[in-house]
Length: 306
Length: 306
Image: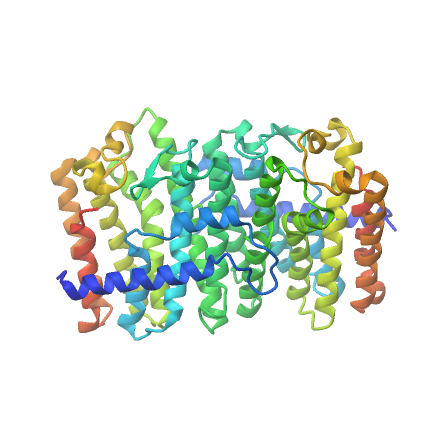
């Protein structure tokens, strides 16, 4: 159930991760550095600070907390994943890709700065994500840090986010529309992999053992699928002012979505199925009442308005 | 001294790292993957296979070998660094950046494919670099893997390669030319950091202790500086056919180089000083005769013709 307490935790996670990003992207040189390239930092800050739902960050922090870890480590890992996510948005918005002018109600990075700066800011944010995960401050265990770097690389790479983005770009210009199965797979790569990794990162940081880790991984995959269907429904039914980005663009562009394949009713049915699957996975993880926030997150993902 | 034996080792390192890259960028799905996005892989293969001096790979492999490690681990780390290097070249060549059509005598990635594919191929190659370094096959020790990921992130990020690229982009449009000191710093970030990390990675993989590690790090920094000055001299004095990329482009673009600041004679003097510094660092590392290949590498970097 999404109540005030849930919204307060969502807000608290956003505040914590924003503070961490603000510190990581300081204009003051880190130890051993000379000056920092100001304009690049400005573009990185512009793209990571000041808003967004922070769903990925929330999943890292709340998964770790549900298992019993509530210190700054998961907040740091959450900041890393938000950096990776921000890089993907900057590059997706570029003229050669989706050519978008608006993101979260503001000009996209290449509009607010310029294309070269946007490309480099995205590049540097990807690097920073790995730098944070490999940092001893994030976790004292080298085993955990190495596993987090490996996990992020898998989620972000060929078999995950970038691979999915490439399939998506190619589908737009292809004569044959993707099948329902292909769309589910594409979305699992493009959006789902990083959301699933957010849950896995929280689980790993809190020392989840098997079979809890596997159940939480299933939870993350279901949340990722639900998130993407809800996003497609919002694009089809929402308006630009509420979304903070252009609405209706998927249909205009023949984007591969489940709505195109199944219709609105069919997509809503799929969404409900993934929410149920996510909740069942929390039960299977054996967290009892401590899993309530994760269950509520499944509801939240399916019913959000922007 | 650069003799036949040296050239044979250089060629052997190139063959080994090419085989590793070929395997990593296979069209066959890895375990747990479905299909791999073919066009993206083609662009990644186009940009990483088939040539280049492989200086960074050579430095990883030969530094490790000089200390006593000659197995496949350093070859894997070398492949990771070549992926990172290839990503930086793809993005630097983009229309919004240097807008180059030619690289190693062939069309640049965005020319051979398209801009969207080139951006994504670069992104995926950066990710792959971290994936390889975090892979247990590269090194059994989680401590070494976490340190390699952290080191690559530092070399590639804000305080290193991308930061230097941003300073370079900004200097091109700035009214005030950079000072000699600023140029040295820019180049240490843009090119030097990754070359230095190549040496450090080899040292770490071979278990170098202090003070050997620090001396080898100094060696890497000197090699990086020498490499960049030699590159600038080749650009000023070479021709396009030999270089495989457009010659004379630095002067035409008011690129910040030591030649612009010190003239040809001054730049050659700096080059000789860095070669001497690199050799002295090998002596300080206490490798004795086993450091001969690293000493020869300093000569090679300064006297190469393309």
